[in-house]
Image (cartoon, rainbow, N blue to C red; front, side, top):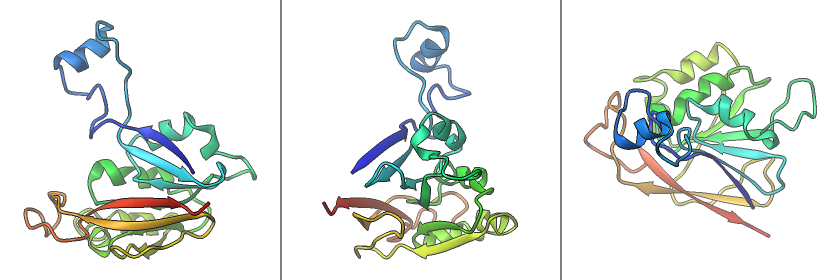
Length: 189
């Protein structure tokens, strides 16, 4: 199994655009020996060519440019991203979906039904994407192993996490299993 850490910073990245704490200011002015980081997202593959993107941060275009294996160039318009999974409906995990709108066919997107609800109503990204590539939604069922077509050799399982839903969710401050999920990935080899 291959895992690319595309970004490891919290929402806003590091340094955060409006933060002048010692760390963020130090990175900007060169007095802190640290690297700037994009917002959290990873990609997972069994073969190094076909990938599932886990969360689509607002920094996704920079992350793809920094990782050529996500752009294998098998055709004039191509991507190594076979599917996208979002673990919650938070803006820093979903805004990058808008950057993937030029996908040639419906974008295979895996998420829990509560996340789909939030991304269809409170933050209607699914409705917006329907005007572009469209979404081929696949429901993440909690604690049920599954496979993603085009990603042979990897088994996935969504695990419930009790964490708050986004501010625009009807579940805000009333977490429900599925608002946020963890992910187990098993290399079947």
